[in-house]
Image (cartoon, helix red, strand yellow):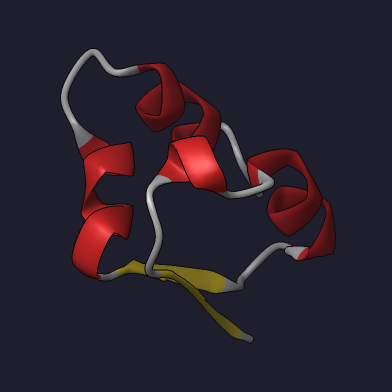
Length: 51
């Protein structure tokens, strides 16, 4: 399944989103959602450890 994050991760329930994801799912970061991929950022490590 393809998931999208288009709002700032500070305004999204990342934990809930990750609970819905399964192995093999993909996540596309759009618009303000790209801030989740900032190097050494709080959310990057969380996203990288997701299934």
